[in-house]
Length: 168
Image (tube, rainbow, N blue to C red):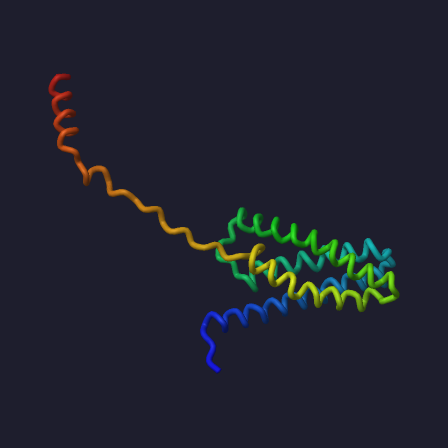
């Protein structure tokens, strides 16, 4: 089976996305375990803290590695961050509902996070590629008029010459 360059690039990008998502999961999972087991922090603060840590780590990987945006001005990074953290706010509520809901029915949060991660794998890929890190289409260069010098109007030139002569 022969694949074209675009398909190959997309497969590689999705693999990088999966690695980055896995890194987010394990950083967040480790942070939750540390906050919960080592520091004895209550469930919700530990879950919120671990989410913020994992999401911030993920933003850096997605922005600069997976989606490799070429424009990295402060404005561009700021705009991507606004879109990313807006989505993460929605995701946070969904994540709390999934993990917290499963916890209420007796499923440990350590398993609930795997369930949530499965959902967010597909959900975030769509949002990242279509909105958060969407490649901006190149704007065509504005069509420039020829210099006015190239289109001299002989009548205008004659009038300006006569005006100069009268002024003397």
